[in-house]
Image (cartoon, rainbow, N blue to C red):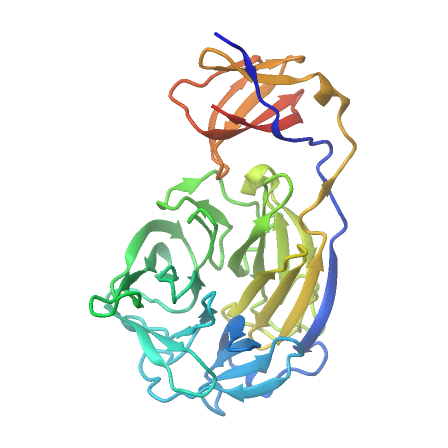
Length: 428
């Protein structure tokens, strides 16, 4: 059998250090600065936010049930200035008439109500003038839907999806709505009115959220619990994050992108249910995490935005939208209920640094007779991962790993004395 050695996309890992992450405040309307909007000062009524380009304008949309009126406020994404509010004709029903907001890639704004139980309605705006249409109307019992939802994809091309979670203590059900072509209108797509299941998640708390990954899997965060990862079939991957790193008072988890080692960068909202005399560094902010080795139990905090205020946020409502720019900077749009709205730009999230490990030059990884062989070192472990970060095989204190019945591209991680000395992609 001919011996084949692969050197595809070799990644050198040393101390796993990270390049300096810089946070730039673009604008902030907050309790901390005394500039918060009047409709977001108290009452836990301003809960949903979306960002995107509607027509020719980049906008931030904020949904509120404030006593001054149930509205979707339109802000300039560049300055945070208030522009207008949307036409609310026909927006009725639900325990809360509006709750969360999201935006499709092609500029369709979706805003949901909250019902417990009843009918979940999701309204669609296509411009800043006209009244919305009802994109989804789904009657359900029992449960509570609409505290939070997640929007992905393109409405015009029929790839948009809406993800929502039944918020009850105990078992929460994750569902999503996809699209179909209108039978009488070729090339025109609408949402299916009945959702598909993405499995059950056992957790305590409310305001559950999902941050969808490019592979269709998702991260899950609910008040009072840690972050978990699930596949696109609803199977949990690995173990949850650590309470020493991720706050239990947190939700609205979002996938941002992978770094240069293929590790996920994610963010989530932190909050406090009680008021304080000064703005706490740990509350009403966004924490950005590096999921080291794509293992949530090894996640670390890369950066945190400033606290937006010291007002109590009784149920942790708010929103987070990330916009990855072509230059690898990331724009963060953040709503903290009762505390503020802000935009930040983060740079340096995706590059890792560290001195090259000289052992790497001596290590050769090859495949031979349904085996993966490591030469040049006696490994303490060899691990094989698929492309979404699931470990499919491993062995300790040996230089060969069987690859029977495996086919495709995988990531190999080799450790010596418990430290990573080489990571590379191979084709089997």
